[in-house]
Image (cartoon, rainbow, N blue to C red; front, side):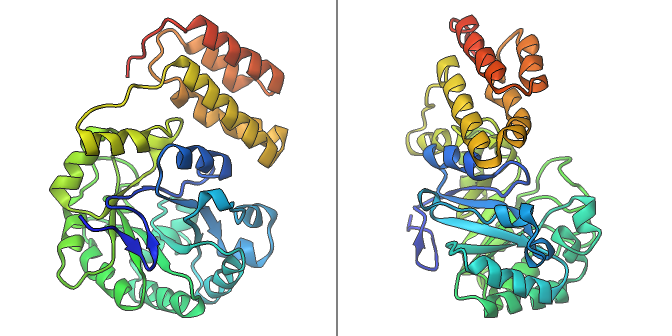
Length: 333
């Protein structure tokens, strides 16, 4: 296999990408995913209108660090002029890639014509992309879905048109906007995009990859250039190295034990507090605890303690107790 590249950014033979996830793929989480094998990562999506207004939350999401590279910043919006201006602002922070979000299915985004909402207006989608490509010297990539609903799965044509106006890679989630995250992702259309003889940019598949076996099976069956992993990495950044090892050797890496899980949870917590401040840092860790300790029997009381406490020292003490209490426990997963 030859190395996958986005312009001159070398990503290895079968790269694993961290999906942009709102309130998840922030710098602390990205740091852990990078350490555990992610080849390319994207920021949380950033509102073009928020950047133009200099909104604090949007601007903070532009924070990227040298150790994260290659890193893409993802922007979204429904107005072409705003997206052009947001591209200019984003480029000043010197990411490796600018990514356009044409996939977010959330109502407050999609129903305003941004994210997956633009799948109802393909000409506008193509025009917006063309303008963004013209605005920046950085490589532009796109994340999108198969279509708005079952009657509008135009992704094969759409991907080709986006390539023709200058995008340098595309990540495709194998569901429509209407499906949200329900049902099974359909990778057959992602394979059609990849197998289109006119396509020459990398095509990454996204959706439902949550085990090394599945990653290898989908790699072999659908022929994509790499896989983008989202929800399966939440509270489990080890998944990237586990997939890589399995693809290379056919064998499983040992699952992280309780000591490793507590250690990474503590690091995540400390980085989160350092980056966001104690109140927000503690609050936003709550979504990760369940996954960090998934598979421990009789864990409910400890989980309740972790997610209800706002006291940093109390959380640290609870984590120490978990390490002691469960040091002999085998995980169920």
